[in-house]
Image (cartoon, rainbow, N blue to C red; front, side, top):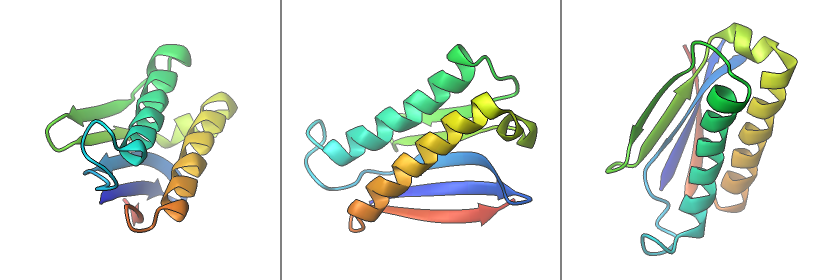
Length: 110
């Protein structure tokens, strides 16, 4: 199962973590894992390379697999960053809602 963690600070989304495999299909053929991975990688690319947001922290572990991305609250306050973050977060929520046996979302206040 993929565990998605949404990290909040003062009700503002300040990070997302994706950990694990969905178990939907064999590695390399798992469309749920692929969808989550693409969204997480797109968020990282969008924040760091396209929007040039500063102070973005991330870690990637291919073996686990794990992708964790976090940002300071002021990033979420910027409209261009906020639209990207909200789009990715809502897309991940839809995948989780459509695949509850394979993806679960946890919220954590930090």
